[in-house]
Length: 68
Image (cartoon, rainbow, N blue to C red; front, side):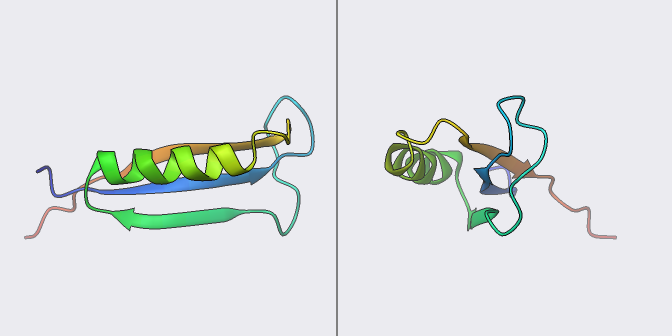
């Protein structure tokens, strides 16, 4: 285990270039301790929204913080 957290982030975008979210549509799921858990969540939210072309989700990894 890497000690990192994983997040599923996304929402509805205003255009198909996927640069700017529609206000109020942002979604954040997590944190997940494993990438597998995040992938399972990503699959679920992506499937629920697959009929909406302007909705996209990504998995991001939060870097592990060094403890001094």
